[in-house]
Image 1 (cartoon, rainbow, N blue to C red):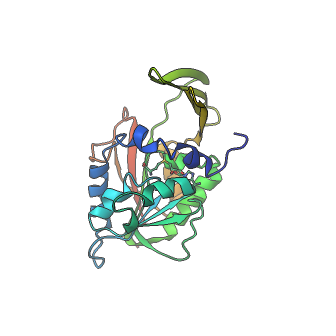
Image 2: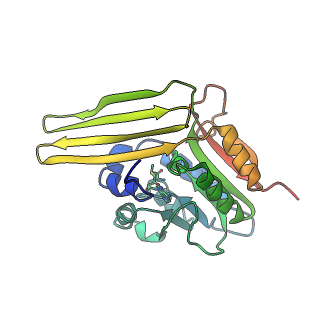
Image 3: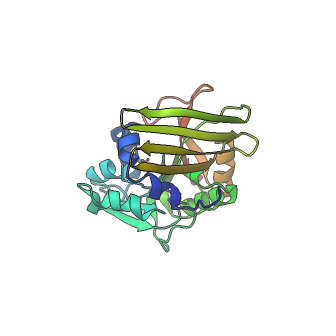
Length: 251
Ligand SMILES: C[S@@+](CC[C@H](N)C(=O)[O-])C[C@H]1O[C@@H](n2cnc3c(N)ncnc32)[C@H](O)[C@@H]1O
């Protein structure tokens, strides 16, 4: 999308993100699972944990509140400002940067995770591969790389316009184009009030679970668990989303 870079999504959605997405998945259950994975032998207290695309801290904050040391990388200063302003926000170490190449030197983590389709914000598959390779290289022995994403369903190219919000003072229209051949979708939420119009653009390139497995394998990781959600519901052919945990193979 012309004029769209790594920071655009976060910068344009920061003001509405919590309002629109706070309840999209079960954050306490996600935090509990990640805290359990982070509690590696010899790293009592759990962690450290790295969240890629931490946003406003929807997941990082409950995880940090459980006593886990959390670092969050995000490309958007506006998103990180929302995180810093929250109760407990100061306990999450926020790092401005690109999740395909996080500016974290040689720091290592018990868990690296990327939730809620955030990996798909990297619209070049080579960047998704770089991101996964960087995560793999940062894992402590016994550590986990965890991805949460939707499972793409085959379909035709589509264009859609639909209302998201209609009140007496505001209309939010969702305008989108989906291109299954390119595994891409892009769109805008067009937020209209009498004061004016705000555009909130988004652009994703999806990968299938099998493609993610291949990228993880290229980074030296193997699939350890695949669940349908953070509650560890078994993954099946009809699962709309997956939570996949990758580890280094035993030597
Ligand atoms: C859908 S939000 C998810 C936020 C949070 N993880 C959650 O689950 O609520 C995606 C986040 O990824 C960030 N992001 C997008 N592209 C990025 C990139 N290349 N590097 C780092 N962060 C990125 C956005 O700024 C935004 O905060």
